[in-house]
Amino acid sequence: MITAIVYILGDSAYPCKTYLMAPILHPANDGGTRYNNAQTKTRNCLERCFGIWKQRFSALAIGLRVSKQAALTAIVAAAVLQNLAVDEGLEVPEPEVAFLENVVLEEAANIIGDGNIHRQYLVRNYF
Image (cartoon, rainbow, N blue to C red; front, side, top):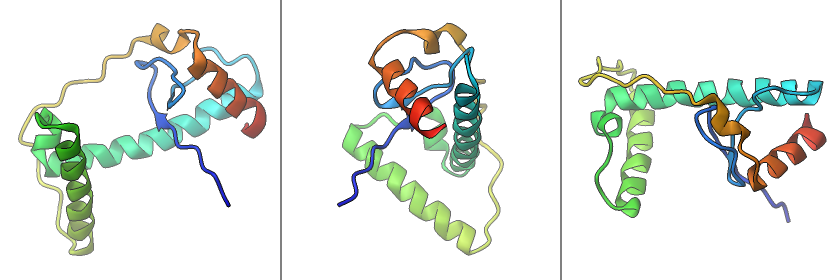
């Protein structure tokens, strides 16, 4: 039996939590640098995908004002419809709403807590 641990990747605007891995602000060793590189490359790829989804489905850009379950259903439906659109070769439409720039709070990722312990474990054992 294989057990997998799933983490959400966040940028430095988010504090490191047990479920959310943020970059290390000032890596002290090569493992930390490798972790940051892998975390950033993966996160950037996902952010580009989310950007395309927000262009195609403007409700995702302005925010869903529904229950968590309804939001989950809408997001899964958007993923399925996006995959169908890609398969059909449909172009991504121009965005209908202006997007806010990400606000980076560099010190947020430095908060000490259980998330940092998880991140240190990842760096020590995988990077």
